[in-house]
Amino acid sequence: MLPTFVIGLREGLEAVLIVTIIATFLRQNNASMRGMWFGVGAGVALATAVGIALNAVEQALPQDKQEMMETVIGGIAVFFVTGMILWMRTHARTMKRELESQAADALASGTLTALTVMAFLAVLREGFETSVFLVATFQHASSAPSAVSGAVLGIVSSVILGWAMFVGGVRINLQKFFKITGVFLVFVAAGLVMFAFRTAHEAGWVNVGQGRTVDLAWLAPNGSIRSALLTGVLGIPSDPRVIEVLAWFAYLLPMLALMFWPAKWALSATTAQRARLGGAGAAVVLAAILFAAVPMPTVSLPTEAPDSTGATVQVSVTGTSAALERANHTYALGNPTPTTDHGADTRWTASKVMGTQPTTLSLQDLIDLNGGRIPSGLGAAAGPFTASWTDQTQLIVLTRNGGLVDGELGGALVLRYSGGGLTTPRILTVEGWHVAPTYADTARATITDTQSARNARALWKSWVPVALLILAAGLGLQALRRRSQAAASGPIEPAASERSHTGSTSTLS
Image (cartoon, one colour):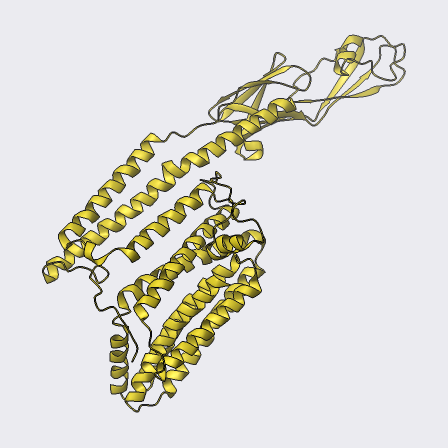
């Protein structure tokens, strides 16, 4: 309830402040507020419709698609709340002056259209951000009714505060208010980052860095107040994974540093420019080191294994062809197709693989073909027997990196034999074979363990280097932009966020 209350209060108050500033300006100039209220109503209606539509679409999707939708909504929500926090941090002190200037321009135009559009867009922007952020927060809330109640209370409270400021009964320090709520929302957004990575894994998008870090069940048992605070408010699961923890810190620490960086520590323009370029270079170097230094394990399996009859089968793969040898017989394999069955990467098949069979069989040959047992109905017949064969066999072999994963000779080899003292012909189906289950289970376990190790290494060999390169690109582009600004307008001025906020008491009058 607390996260949605703060979201509703802060986002609602931003929208209410904009409307209040415009309304106050119009009242002071004896102008009609009809166009403003029309824009406000349209913005609220459209933003509400967006939130309802997002929730309805998500509920109508299959489970795996819901996970994908939740990931996308969570990412958009984090983007919006981050932009909102940073924008308000640098514009809170000048928002009143900017809005009054825009309202004056609208009045000067002699039409209510500009004022209506201005109010509509302001409310729609805040309302859309609120809708997306609340939908993302509802997704991992422990109690949906409580979350909805918190959002409603927050929005109602923001409207009451706005009305009190409009009639002149309340004066608040907006800068402190937005800073305090901004810090809280940074923690909420960091929890949304963790939640987005969790749903991305459940959707099948992120499989790296899934190793467990710590078990927080002891700290926040289900149903406890601590669990409501840790999971419900901060969005931290009881079993955070490696990539979730890294993403949490990667978002939280820079945002907190930006919000609490003392004005007296502000870097000079030249030093800041050097810091950006130095940080970009360091990120590139670190990315290259990680990519080169982190090894990736590969699956290595034997090429031979026992089968269900005790014989040994051996596979050999050469390019796009393969062969399997068993009991001094070699089977040519073809039709290689990619597969993920049992962790294999290639599936080989061959049909009617038994080749030419003898046309005359002794009694011992029949016993051997029948698994060491005398065929039923043989009676006193002692052979030799005349044999005819129908080959319906199919050989399937699974390999991974050329090693044997599993194999089976299925289908049927049907023998029809007669003579040798038999009064009528007999039918015998010769059973096939398969790779011993103990070997197949061991091979699959080896593949699974290796894949888990690869996923863990991929986080450091691929994902972290890519994130570092993106950071380097961002710092480099920012450095180029500042250099272009300096070339166009003279010495580089500190950014608004870097200047000291002296006289920080901001009130609405």
